[in-house]
Length: 67
Image (cartoon, rainbow, N blue to C red; front, side, top):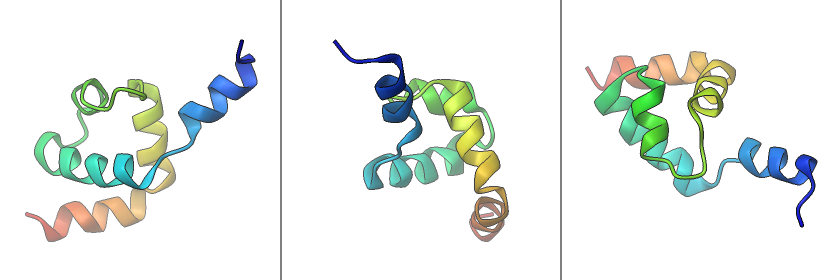
């Protein structure tokens, strides 16, 4: 059985595919982290919000360039 720490790390790690999907979903849904998380099976809204917060400057530029 996985330890709580392993589960936590699995949720904290973002694959290249998840990052790519996140960018696409961010373009569609903006900062609606609930909707984005609903389409990323391994992520919860708090994971999505944390990822956004940790990469906010880069992601804000991405959103601006797509509008």
